[in-house]
Image (cartoon, rainbow, N blue to C red; front, side, top):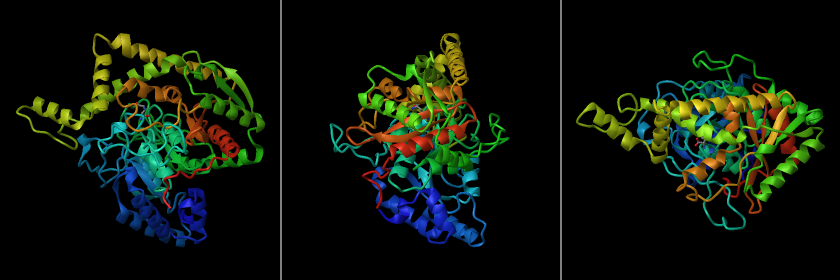
Length: 498
Ligand code: GLN
C-alpha cells in the first residue's frame, strides 16, 4: 500500500497544508487506485479530467493560504446526489442519460470546502436494498474477503444501498464518500466494510438535489475510514437550506471539539443504555459477544451502562416497510418518460408511461411501488399506512423516554457480517431483516453511527452502533472515538489498492 493511499483525510489535509504532497499527486493516486480496483464495480462513472482540474484549483488555493476544510481531498459521490453536468442515475435504467442542471446542496458544500470529485458511485437502484444487488449496473464486490469458513473464496456483498461508497472506501479508491441512509444504507455498508458511517439527525443535511426515495426518512451522511474523518466530513456536509422545507436551522455542535474531549477525558460521566429489545432470535453468538465487549469498553472509559427498554422496537421493521414504499411509490411517480431520462414509445400516452416504467425500473423498485400504492389505496390506507404512522410515533416516544435517562444507546449495527453475493436476493423478507437495528433511528429522525469494532470468526468486519437524541451528533462522535480507540480496528481490507 503506497503511503499516500494509507493517509486518512485528516492526515492528508495536514500533508497538503505542509506541502509534503500536492492535491494533484493525491488525486492522481486515487484515480489510479480506482483503475486498479475496477473489478469491484464500484464506480459507475469516473471524472478524471474534472478531478485533476479541481485538484489544480485546490493546489492554487493552498499556495495562497486559502484552503477549505476538505481542500484537495478526493471524494466518490453516491449516484443518488445530483451533480451538475455529470450524469446521475440512482443506478436505475430509467434515469440513463439524465444530466442534472443543478448540484445537490450536500455535494455543493463539499466542493465549496475544496473537495475533489473522482466520479459517481454504484448503489442499489433508488437506494432500495441491503446488498447493492438491485443496481442496474450490477452488484458491487466487497474488498474484504473471508479468511476462513464457508464464505472463503466467495465474492461478498459490501452491503447496501451505499455499497459502492463503502467499497471505494475499503478499497482505498476514494478518501471520503457521502452516502444516503433511509433505513440503514450508510451504517450497514459501513459495518460490512470496516468503516465509520454516520446517519445524522433528520434535517441536518439538505435533501435538495438528492434523488428522493422516502422523503420523511432520507438523510445524507459520511462514510469514512475513522471517526476523526467522520467529524470533519459531517461538518462540511451539514447546512441549513431554505430549499429543503425539512432542513433544520440549528448549529451543528463542534464535532472536532467533541473528538478532542473524547481523547482527553474518555466518556467519563456518560450514561449509555443497552436496549433489551435489540437481542433478537437467532442472533449469532459473535454479535452478542461483540456487543458485550462494546459495553465493557465504554465502562472502562468511564461510562455507566444501564439496561433500557424500547418496547415498540419489534414493530419498527414492519412499519418501515410500509412507510418507505408508500413514500417511494409517490416519489417515483415522476419518472414517466416525459420529464427525466429514458422513454419507450407507445401508441398512446398511457402505453408510453407503462412501457417506460416497465422497462426502466428493476424488480425491487417495482415491488416497492406495488406495496406502496397498495398501502396507500383507499381500502387499505387506514389498515396499513395510518397504522404504520401511529407505530412510528410510538417508536419516537420510546426513544424520547429513554433519552431522559441516558445520553446514548449501544447496539450492534447489523445482525450478521457481510454475506455472499446472490445469497439472499431470492428472498426479499430475509433481505429486509438486515435493517432490524438501523431502521428505528430513521423512523425517529435521530442520529446514529456505526463504528468498526472487531472481526467475525472468518475475518470479516463487524460494527457497533451508537444512537443519540436529535441534534446530538457530538455525543456520537465522543462515544464512537472511544469505541474506535478500544477496538484498535485494522482498516486495511484484503482487496485494497496498493
Ligand atoms: N435496506 C433498506 C431498504 O431497502 C434501507 C435502504 C436505505 O437506507 N436507503 O429500504
